[in-house]
Amino acid sequence: MLSSSGRRIGFGSMQLTGPGHWAAPDDPGRAMQVLRDAVDAGVTHIDTADAYGPFTAEKYIRKALHPYPDGLVIATKGGLTRQGPNRWAPCGRPEYLHQCVEMSLRRLQVERIDLYYLHRIDPAVPLEDQLGVLRDMQAEGKIGNIGLSKVNLEQLRTASELVEVAAVQNKYNVTNRASEDVLRHCEMADISFVPYAPLAAGALTTPDAMGQIAQDYGVTPAQLALAWLLHRSPVMAPIPGTSSSARLHENLAADQISLTPETMTAIELAAANADNQSEAGRKR
Image 1 (cartoon, helix red, strand yellow):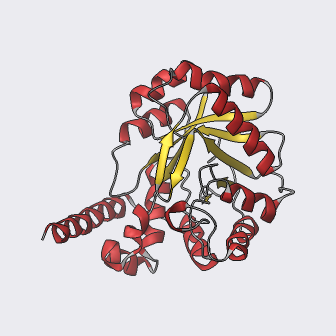
Image 2 (cartoon, one colour):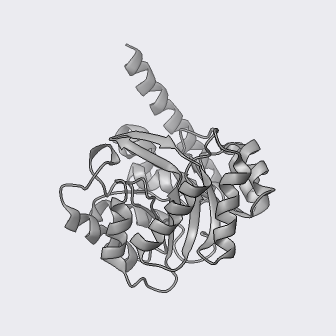
Image 3 (cartoon, rainbow, N blue to C red):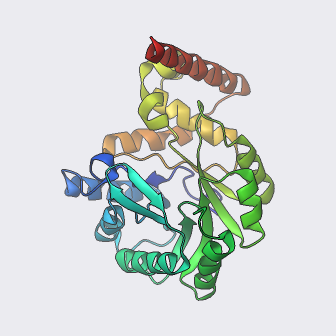
């Protein structure tokens, strides 16, 4: 549902919060300007979550963009609680998830959430109960599509028997392809695959990552890493996040890069070598 029209590169709002994804950033005005710049540049998919801040990113999206332009998909998530910077804990109790949806509707000021993810499967609550409340709210018209985040193949298959899964958001980039089996399933089932950490938390933006290939193409390593994702699969919908408008436009330009199969392989080898060198340095 995310890669069929408009830009395939979306915008992830996680970086529009304070350190540890906690509270507000130093410059909220700058954060909201990045959101406006993203939409002005043609971004049609903005990803957020109630846990970002918590609640901060959703509020910024409303303040910066409401009333929303036609065709803009806003995806949010629920099911994680926050205890402090970089601290997250799942809570999949149906009454809590119901509250999460209702509060996101209020913060975003919409009557229906285009795409709502179960942020994490709570192992202490039956999956049927967690997805059941989202399915009920979808039937009420409060959720358009249901997604899953950080799931393995078995969980995805089980969930797909309970609801129609529209999107999966897992960690995936050129140096981390642990979710390859999930990606292939998404291709077969026509499910959007939304890779979070598409630039490996900044590791793929450094000259050491794929410097020579990027130099040969006249692009940045970050652009090359995003272009690799777009060429990797037709269901891929990356959501690189940034608090900088300059970096935003740099990321979006990646969808203009054409890669040959040989370059795809070269990128994978270069990224793997850089990753191995970094790992060796950490062990010294």
